[in-house]
Amino acid sequence: MRFLTGLSRRYQGRRSAPDMKQLGAGTRRFRRGRPASLGFRRRAAIISTILTALMLVGNIPATAAATVTSTIPVGTQPYGVAFTADGSTAYVTNAGSSTMSVVDVASGTVTSTIDVGATPRGVAFTPDGSTAYVINSDSDSVSVIDVASGTVTPTELGNPAYFSTPYGVAFTPDGSTAYVTNFGGSNTVSVIDVASSTVTSQIPVGPHPFGVAFTPDGSTAYVTIPDSDTVSVVDVASSTVTSTIPVGPHPFGVTFTPDGSTAYVTNANSDTVSVIDVASGTVTSTIPVGTAPYGVAVTPDGSTAYVTNSGSDTVSVIDVASGTVTSTIPVGPEPVGVAFTPDGSTAYVTNYGSDTVSVITVNPVPPVFTADTPPTKATTRAAYSYTFTATGDPAPTFYVSSGALPAGLSLDSSTGVLSGTPTKAGKATFTVTATNGISPDAVTPRITITVTKGKGR
Image (cartoon, helix red, strand yellow):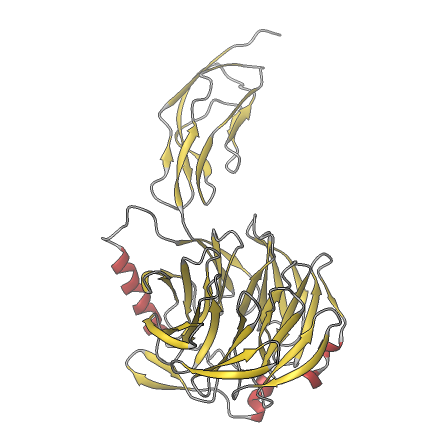
């Protein structure tokens, strides 16, 4: 099956469908003038994942590296992802089902699904978290979602007259304005006044604009132009393109460091990331990453950049200070979108090929018990309670790893509470393990609880 993630079906009718050409063993490249198809050879992806695993084994760092700690099932062909300002909720666009999954971050579960326009791609929240924009490529529209109610608000942004196969979306830092890239024939960026939900102007940029991001001060926007291997630099005050920056072949994703000094652009046809010095508007270095890099995001502290490699089913972790890839994280098939929680502790990666989101713990910490000495005496007919606690990131869960608890007692795996009323006199010996997927697990010493018969009838 070929996944046509880069182009809407309706747009394919106006032009030839996106296809791939083989430029080397095991490597796909995107044809110029056509956006990315993510239907890569599975053999190449499997080999890449195996090689990555082999490189990781045998050179385990003293401090645990970022790793996938859970996987969340979402809708069909997930594409874009964004977090609310408080980090409690994530929105994931499902390009294959014209829906958006609302994920509760604390539980890691989908709590609701919102119907949006056809083939949703980009998604972004206003800085205050009250509103989300979802870009619908096949219906040439923007769905405006009221976050509190979880409903789509009718606006003129649902009118196809204002957009042409839109893909990317970003808000200015003050939340007053949004830019939407029109990959279709207009070769423009639509400027939206957020307060009125109206398109106020169209900015001509390069052919088939794709990704968009604002500098932290809101003065400038970068727009990736895959057809010309460039980035259009837009002055926000004048709504004009002031310069063009040559980057690598077929640029897609773009983001800035929090201080606004540097921009990262993914180049899908060269398996690289262009690093741009914003002050001079020039590429200062090029970083090799995985196959067909697509999305890119920088941690809120500016120390690290994550790049989704849609052709090798991995995420490249770039150390911003050194400009080098420090690790590679295997994720799900055909990763596209990536975003960090506001506190930088977690990243979500959308896996287009498996209808899932990979949850990456950025700085994982193995569990360590801070309370593991329950009372050793108990009596029948008397309530017993003790809470095992352990540190770690992600938060650990608990289980009885050897022996058995006294009859009548049970251990809550999520809270660590050992409780109940013993029903039988005698001794019970056991151990408790705290685990969070990061080695090594924490294990208590052998615990013996002696239960005596309580007084009463």
